[in-house]
Structure formats: C-alpha cells, structure tokens
Length: 491
Ligand code: SF4
Image (cartoon, rainbow, N blue to C red; front, top):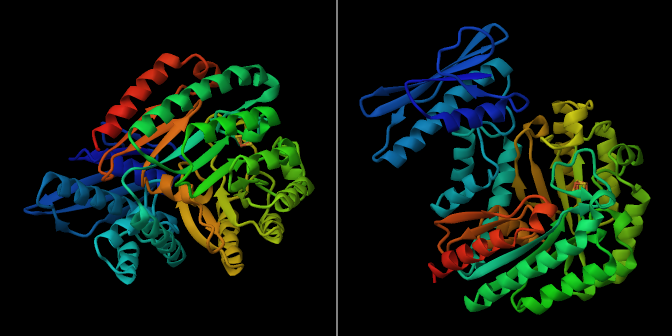
C-alpha cells in the first residue's frame, strides 16, 4: 500500500502500524499524494499547542477515515515525537478498523516486544488496573491479549528486581541441521551440504569464546545463563559436542549460572549418549522441538522424524534426569487444521514439558515456503489455534512468561512461552527484556551490549554464514576490542 505523509515526517510509526494491520502487504512511502489503488494519506494537524492526526484510507476503491484524539504537543522535541507518533498510529488504526469492521486482537500495538509497554508503565508506578486501562484505551488491545501482556510484564518485573549490573549471558550458535525445514528462514546449513565446514567452524568458535572469556574475567562479570542454539547443536557428533561444552565450562566461571540450555530440536540428532553429554557438561534445560505432532506435516516440512521419535526422546531425557524440557510448536503450518493443531497441543501436554513455546508461523525471505507459496491455514484458523493453545496450556497449570511478535506473522499474532511454576526460562527473559549484555558467538550471532544502567545498547554482528565466519578472525578482533571498550566504560 502507498503511504503519503501530509505535512510531517513520521514515517516509522506510519509504516509500523501499516505492517501490523496489513501484515501480508508491502508498504511504501510516496512523495506525491496518490489518487488511485490502495493508499493511506496521513496528516498531522497543529493547532496552537495541540496536535491531532487524520487518516484517509483507500481500499478497493472505498475510502475510510480515522482521526486521533487531540492532545498537547509536549514540552520538548522528544515528547513531541512521542505524541505525534502516537497520533499518526491512532489515526491510521481507526481508519483501518473502519475498513476491517473489527478490532485486531493486538490493536495498535507495534514492535516485537509488546510487553515492554506494560513493563514501562509498571516502572512508572502505574497499577495493573491503570496499565490495563492504557492498553485498552490508547492501544486498543483485546482483553485476552491485555491479560497476556500483563502476565508477561509481571514476570519481567521480577527478573528486573534481581538484576545485577555486571550480569551477562552467553549464546553459542551452531548453524547446522540434519536437513532444512521448509519454513526455516534461519542461517542453517544441512550437514549433507556443509558438513565439511563443521571442524573449522568449531575451531573458530573456540577461539571466539576464549577471547570473550578473557574480557569477562578481566571485568569481573557474572555469567547468568548459557544458550547453545542453532541450527541444531545436537547435529554435532557426540565427541564434538562434548569437546565444545567442556571448553565452555573450562573457559567461564559457572558459579552464578541460573540456567544452561542446549537446543536438541530434532530427535533424529539426539541419542541417549548426547543427552548424557548435555547433562554431564552442566546443562539444566533441553529444547526438544516437535513443531507439530502430525507425522504427515513433519514429513512435508522436510523433518526426518516422527512424533513417536519425539516421545521416545522425551522419555530418554526423563530417564537421564536433571534436565528441564522445552517444546516448541508452530501454529499455522501448511496443511495443519485447527483440529490437528489441538491434537498436537494435547500430545505435547501429555509429555509434561516444563516449558511450551507456541510460535505462529512467520514466512520470511529465505524460507522454501516463501519460494513455493504453499497454501496456509487462514488467519482466523491460526487465531483459533493460538487461542486454544493459550487456554489449554494455562488450564494445565502453565503461565505465559515471555512473548514477541514478528513481521509477516500469520494472522498478525504472536509467539508465547509458557512455563510450569518455578521453570521460567531466564535466558528468554534476559534477551526479551534486554536486561543485560548477551555475548553471541558463532555465525550469524549478534552480540548485544547493554550498559549497566540499560540506557545504551550496541549491537555487533558476526559474519552470517559459516564459510564467512570461519575466516572472520580480523572482524572478531574488532568485536573483542569494541566489547571491552563498551563494558569498561560503564565500570
Ligand atoms: S531445525 Fe530449526 S534451524 Fe534447523 S532447518 Fe529446521 S527450522 Fe531451521
């Protein structure tokens, strides 16, 4: 859709709300007022100290209007930008609701971390009831999603209170998988094609980890959590996995660790021997990710395992003991139905994992699904799947504790992590709420440096692909210098 901004430059809020309300479309800002096709003209009106915004939305030849409430422009440029952005967002949203004939569940909330809105309101001293009122009246969020946001924000607040300024976490990426899933948009290579890169990759990874460990010990930082993700880390041979995890425990002080997760997403890659290695090397949590318990869909998505393999692997993990289990499911996979998804939820609940993460399919560039254009369940069905998951999982005793949204997500919904009491995943809260620095080692890793008072965040991007990463020593040296300089400046 074409977006024309009349008399102002608030492109970002206009584009964000357009993506949220019409997630399946591409939106471009145009210089000239459009007079045909689908478009939105968004104006910002100044009247003395007050501002408001109006939107004229043209869809399929019909025109719809929206207007924001009038509000004070604010006392300084920052406040003005905030108020004007909100006005632009609200006017567009109101026009869109006229067209849609209903309020989308997430209302006018934009951004990938919606729980930051109630969290900030809590931090300002607003009660839960007042926060709920803001979410309802300013962001138009549905009652179900407001309750979800407040649950998640409440949990974030607890971690915020326990935070120490010298905390950090460690992410280690293994971007290799047994085969590539059709929906995958991660940088992950099948071992069939890229297996020869694994040896040099692990060497570079150990080099990167060793350099970070020196910086961390010089600055006396406390390691709170480790997450080995991917890809599928268990695609490594047992000896390689044991060697890598052994290297991590020798390089970092584990005294303050509250959680250590290893993703073993695919049961075809994790036998008892590897599960034992994971446990014996200090992990506390393992992620087994069925995505669906429907064997036909698993096969169609290129996953070389069945739901029976998931059940067998979970039994192996339980027999080994000492590891909390997370299971990921995806709502909206091609070929899935509301009934099929409900069956998947119930089968996963039968396995009693400590965490369940319900993702909504998001089709991004780089996935085979994007290229093939496979037919998908419609937005209403996906919404029913997500609602069922929320109700069934919470009725089984779990609580939502983290959530995020993505661009192009099916039905404009969300991804939610649920935990049994006492099993909230610390790493997920740290990363989602940007509570402390996360050092990210490996290809595609993005180290996020967070200042001790959380007022500044800087990102360092590793080389994306393993073949680039394997030759990226000079780039990494630059990252080590920047990391030390950044962290030292806040001592
Ligand atoms: S297991 Fe995960 S990372 Fe690997 S191909 Fe499938 S979706 Fe991608």
